[in-house]
Structure formats: structure tokens, C-alpha cells
Length: 545
Ligand code: GLC
Image (cartoon, rainbow, N blue to C red; front, top):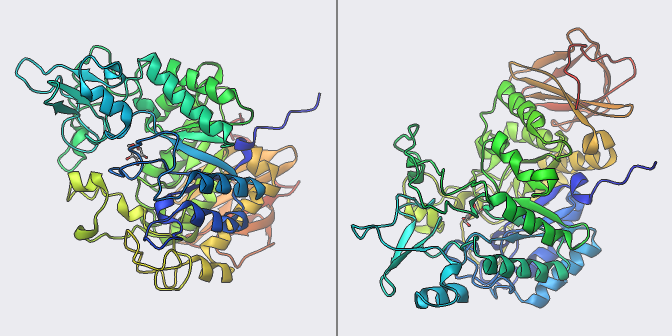
């Protein structure tokens, strides 16, 4: 029986664009859809398969688009619906899928639904949001906290009740227990699916359902001064409620009305709880975002443990995925350092499962320090001084050596990294040893080597700074050897035999070397070796899945 081809999103590399910061074409210092369209050749050259756009819908931009005022429009800041259609058309013509960011947990307080809801207690849309009477002392109904600082309840004096907001007060949470709300969001999804989008990344999907008894969250005994203030309580009754899975199954059925679409969920949970989001019989999201690499200590043993733990926790048939950066977290090149950023790229692009690359990480962009007067992130503004700000990972893409880095011809909305004159796409394209060229080669290798794209993962060793694993499919066996430290290492296979050919090194100046017996890795170097028939893997290696 011929094997059916795996769905596109299993062999794809996803590329996240933060639209405000990719390319400005109308000289307002903010990126736009036309800019993204003009830069598609960059994505094609890099070799990625899908473009995920952070929100581009009409929004007051209190949380830069994660406060949606209309689910079926395009904010004029980014362009028009015609610009959107043109972008999707051009992306598809270039062989790229387009994934939109769906933000169903909350709307903007300027959304017509919320305006109606707050207009009176008897408005038909009142129950579309989460309204509660004050507690007997007149205070908020319970102790729930906002992720962006302060209480999660905002008092509405006109109607004498509080509404719940997991994030800003300008982002009231929708009531997902109300079937009309669900139907309205599903219609918005169909609107975009009919327009040809290839799927959604669903914002804070594990937040959708809250406790129906509104119980207080328990105090967090691990809370330390300096932690984000909302960590003072554990989000037991506000997130990851059991009923959320039935809702996600419904959402998935909407996506399944259209062929070959993907549903991705943003979920920050420990791996064992994360994997529940694949759903019963894999009827949940196709890809619950796996953020383990965003939060890990950078040690071979810790990373190996989390890979093995993830592989072991996956449900049968659940397809893995990996993320190294996004618009909410410190840039990888700053987390692990510029040398290790290359090793991290090799890890991301050789692990089993769909990788997501955050724009700018392909050129090793650093977290940019933001002077206090230029801070834009509402999280940072609400909770200043705790270094929680997300602006530093959202700065304009560094394209070339021109004054505004080719991003704009005016001062951009956020400062450019001060390394943009040398660290940019133009320079790195010309330099065969750059991290950009490394990304290109890694993606190309992934494309041409089924073992990397679809093969099994077999852990080999993790000791000291060395992380060693094999990806294999049929007779193709690729050894990935990563040096997570800055001292040279000698790699050999205890109880086995190393033999093969070096396919790619993060160092950029080593190619096609024969490898027999051992492989010398420099500090901060990772390498991929194609094992030959004489190579023998240690027999105690656990059986692959
Ligand atoms: C998600 C987004 C983040 C946003 C928040 C509220 O975590 O990634 O940027 O602020 O949800 O929508």
C-alpha cells in the first residue's frame, strides 16, 4: 500500500513575522503588508515554507494587535484587505503558506461586541464577556490577577459590575462558555479560511475557559520578589481548565471543514500538560507550541532531558514541534550568546518536528536595550523595572547598511539594534560563514534529507557540553553533534564506531571531511555527520519510537 504523504505542516519550517517590524513601505516607521510582500524573496531564499503573521486586524494597538476590534478586517496601519489578498496570493505563488494569528480569548474594549456588552446588564451581548458582581466588600469578585500586572477585574461604574481581563483592562476576556461567542469566532475563522489562509496560531488557547465557580487561585509558594507579579498565585482556576479541550475540538472541526489547514496553539504549560492539547484521538490542535527551548538552561544534559521527556510524552501520532524565539521572549542570540546561537539553530533545525524561526533570529539579531522613554510594551509599562519588557525582541528587521537598516526611511517605532550597520541581511548574504548562510544550509539540508524532516530521533549521549543524537530514516542515518560550550571537544562513540562524512558544520568553513573513529568539534560548534554503513551506534541506545 503506498504511504500517504504527511501533511505539509509536518515537513514545513514556519517563519514568524511581527508585522510592525518587518518592512515599512509608507514611511510611518511601522511595517506593513506591502512590506512583507516585497520581502517574500527573503523567505524564499531562506527556504522556509510558511509565514505566520502576528495580528494585522483593526485594533487600538493597546497590546499591538493582540487587542482585536474587528475579527474580519485589516488595520489601515498595515494596509487594506486588497493588500492582504495580494500578500496571500504572492505568498502562495512563491510556494509559501500563510498562517494568521487568531486572538479569541479576548477582544479590544473598543470591539463593538464589548461596547454593547458594557452598555447595560440586559444587553443581549452582556453574557459574551465575563461580568460578576463585586464581592460583599465592594472589591473584585475574587483574587484573580492579570498577566500584565494588577487585578484581573475592572469595575464598570455605569453597570455596577466587574469584568474579567487576563491581560490589559483594554482586553476584556470573551465568555467561551457562551455558544454565541464560539459561533461568532468560528465564523471569523471561516472568513479567513475562505480567503485562502492556511491555518491559525491561536493566541493563549489554554486560557479560553475559566472556572465556572470563580474560585480563588491558590497562593504560589515558589513566588519570589522580582518574579512577574501575577506569579504570586497559581493559575489553577483561570487557565488549563478541563473543559477547554471540548472547545478546542470544536475549533479544530471548523479548520477541518477546509482541506490541508493547520491549527497551532500558543500554550505555556509543562510538557506533560502541554501534550493534552493534541486532544482525544488527536482531535485538538495539530501543533501545541512547544516552548521548552525558550525557557531551558543551556546545558547538554538539561536539553537532552527535555527532548527525551517531550518525545516520551507525545501521544501516539502526535507530531512534535520546536520554537527558539518569539515576540514575547528574549532573543535567542542574547539568551545563549552569539556563538551558541549557531548551535541552537542547528538544534532547532535538526530536531524531530516542525520548527518555528522568529524573524531576525536567522541573522542572529540581539535583544535591543530600550531606553525608558521609548518603551512601548504595555507589560513593561505596567510593571516597570523588572526587565519583563518585550520591545527588545520586536525591533525592526535589519536588512542593510542604510541609516534605518532598510526597514524604513524614517525613524522606526522602536529603536534599531546598534549593530545594524554590520549585522544585517545584506552583509550576511555576502558572507558564506554567516549565521544567515548557516540557516539557509540547515533548511536546505532538512529539505533534501528525509531523515531530518521525517526520520526517527535516537538519543546517543549527553555529557559535559556534548549533545549527541541521530536522526534516521530507512538507510539514512545522520548524527548531530552539538558542543554547547566554548571549549573544543572530541566526539567518539563509546561501544560503537563513528564513521561517515561531515555534511555541515556551524563553523561554515568545514565541509565534506571524512570522519573515522572520532570527530573534533571546536568550541561553539555543531556538526551533522552522515553515518556510513561501517558506523555502529552504541547498542545500549534506547529503542527509537
Ligand atoms: C500572547 C501573545 C502576547 C500577547 C498576549 C495577550 O501571549 O503572544 O504577545 O500580549 O497573548 O494577547
